[in-house]
Image 1 (cartoon, rainbow, N blue to C red):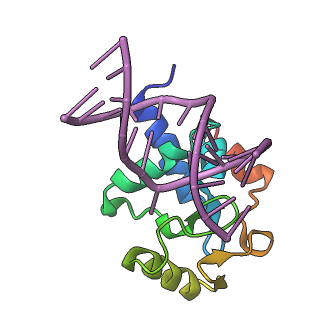
Image 2: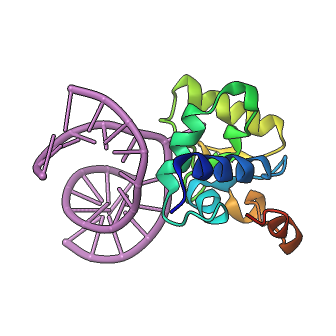
Length: 114
DNA sequence: GTGGTGACGCGGA
DNA sequence: ATCCGCGCCACCA
């Protein structure tokens, strides 16, 4: 079984690969990190990782493309603002995953050989 | 050990 | 749309 630190590392590594101008979902990150069904863990890691790591937390959305934070909260508005600065269209705290959803290609995934 | 709580996800009513 | 239950699992009371 993977230890806590390894799971955390895999998730952080996956997060780093989300390209500018694209977004991913918690579940997608978990899957790519080799941790299917562990979307909640992604949120936990994102919440606890030190800012110094510069993880693209703003590019992670719930399935369906909506911002995880409650509408109107400073965190949700901040995330919306950053995403828009990155060229992503955010309508009512939601993003069109068909247009902005990250779809990693084989080469990107192969580099992640754990 | 039991139960509640999450930056979650999905299906059903 | 909204509410609920369940799966998931680390943490804490």
